[in-house]
Image 1: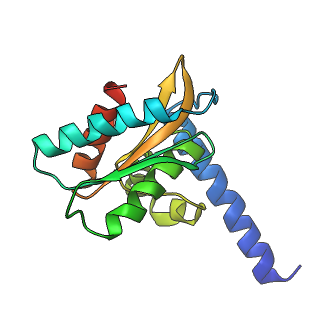
Image 2: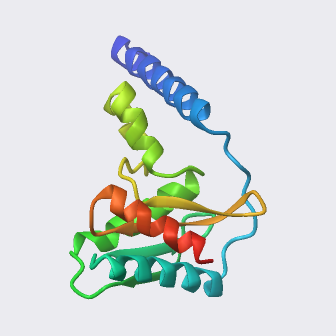
Length: 161
C-alpha cells in the first residue's frame, strides 16, 4: 500500500470514528420498524402542506420508507425547482442514518466539514425521521424555505400523523 493510500485510509478511519462518536453522543439510534404506508405518508404530507401554506411558504415534501425509497411526494405551486430533489435527499438521509438532518449540520459546525464525505449526508435541517412505537418507519424531507422553516414544517407533518 502506498504512503498516500495509507494516509487516506487512516484519515477515513479517523473521520468515521470522529463522526460516529459525535453523532452517537448526540442520540442513541433506534431500530427500524415496518415501513410507512401510503395512507400515513399522505397524512404527514397534508400536515406539512398545511403548516407551510399557513406561513405562505412554498415547499416540496417527500416521504420515504425505512430504506430511503420514495413513498409519497407533493409540492406547493411555485416551489423552486431545486427543492424537489433536496426534499427527497433530506428524507432519505434522515431515514438511512436514523437521525434528523440537523445533526449533520451540528457536527459540521463543531468539527468541520469532514462529515460531508459520508454518502448521502445532508447538512441542512428539514429531514426528520418518523417514529412509531420507538422504531423508525420512514422519514419526511421538506425543502423550499430556510432549513429551520423546512424542519418546522416537517415536524408539523409528523405531528399530524
